[in-house]
Image 1 (cartoon, rainbow, N blue to C red):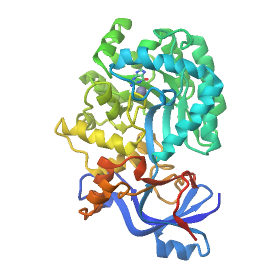
Image 2: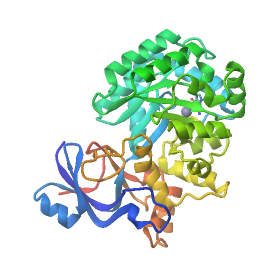
Image 3: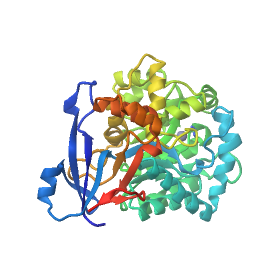
Image 4: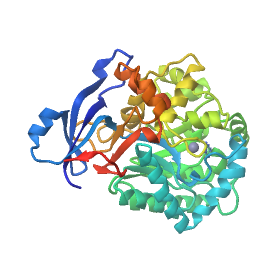
Length: 436
Ligand code: GUN
Ligand code: ZN
């Protein structure tokens, strides 16, 4: 990839903003530039300074748009690209009626390969440059996704779902096959290029105790890998889990018993946790992942962001497509704002944009590589246009501050507001911006 300068308004976070006035938490440069070299950010600063450091480099001029770190989506299901917007059910019926039948199609490597490319196209079109993704139970589906991400030099965390019961024929592995396939994928992919492996027992309902035990040995043998699963999303799910694991103190107790919990454990949803479960999340460092569009769509419940943060938990925020209804992290913030409003909590735009960039990176322990525009970071960048639609342009006429502009993007933005996305320095959208 050719080295170049990107010119535009530049926003990057150094820490989580503690409130609307916390200007120390971020840098904002009106006429800013990024020096992009070999897939990384070589330097960031004012255009005048950076251009002087690198005379003669081609310049892509994104003014008046806003450049920030690419968005990070820490919970999404790749085999659900054709499940999104399936009508009328809550979690368990939705899984049985729509999701499981669709996921059986990913046994076919050609289908998986086609969907992987379309899935990653959707992510980058929406400004997402890193995803933590569930594949289907089929090893070939994880292969397809990881290969396609490698082809694009895109940072990805992914894993083959482990599920050996309570699912249809064609969508079950066995405890041993789930272990063997996961192990083979870890050996082949974890740490290769920009890929990480996530050990992925789908949730307690679809795994036997033997399978969770084997997931626990994978975690113990591969402490550098992530672990992703679902926790406490829906009341019927919680009751069913209790009936399958009668000796566990609660839902989280199942995962705790098999040694799945650590700061690398990403626990989707966490809507109805007991005080004991919250305390165990805090002690182990496991991360709750808030999925607002999914929680509203499936009628699952309201995520208590402030309550969990007060107990010292590090919350991530994600789309959960196809229970989630949009690939857009902007739309995810929009719905997240409303979920918090219903509970008297606030999601200020500075904290919101920190969350989907450096905040999610920090929840993944990757903030030294992604989530900021600091020199040395990987050149995963999104360019945002707060006037992308006529309605946004009209509203922007009355916006006077950076926070107001960000809030318009947070509430009204989607893929139309993403003027460009760079993955490891390479532009993903064919654009009309001027390059000199
Ligand atoms: N719990 C187990 N599997 C799933 C899934 O695919 N989506 C959601 N939202 N919850 C789950
Ligand atoms: Zn999910």
